[in-house]
Length: 213
Image (cartoon, rainbow, N blue to C red; front, top):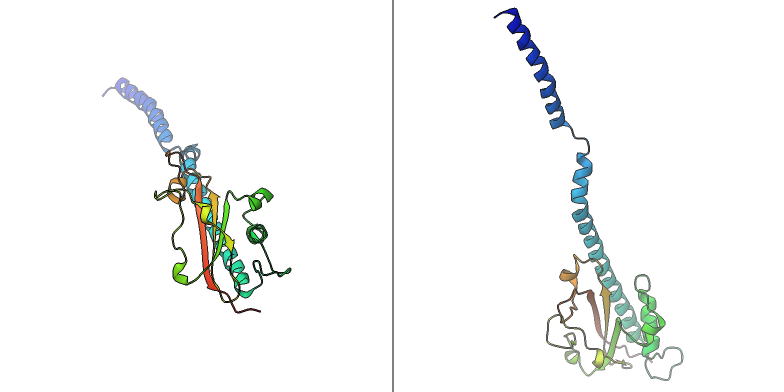
């Protein structure tokens, strides 16, 4: 091989090597990859995070309502709250009782004055029965559909006096905000098939009052 051919070959190699190095450098480069990956994963990631938080808050509110039912049920059972017994210190009507209930849950659930007097989210049913077997076990709904709205027409505030059997049940429409969670945890759904928004919280306690004086 002549020196002319060798020089030409070396010249071609010198041209090729920078090109190959450039392509290898581009292939190994990670500049901006993290930002692109984050942009791709951010939306589903935050949707999942919001769904977890939404579910947690809804079930925390359910526990709060349950605690309020147990607390006020205990006060009814022991005579700390009475109904139509001509006792100035302990007698309550429905409005008074609803206000006391709202005070128990106000850390997460705020009741306006109109909500206390005219319920649209919080419903309370407190009644006396002749036996525990007579206490209703199902949720009254407006139709037989599984996710039909509740029917509050039978709700009353008529707890009994000493030694009577009573039931205290509270319902609360908790609004679910995250669209991803709504189809899975909502328990009241519109008949027209539109996006549901209410998770129905239900808490019940049944008890026999003490024979208080």
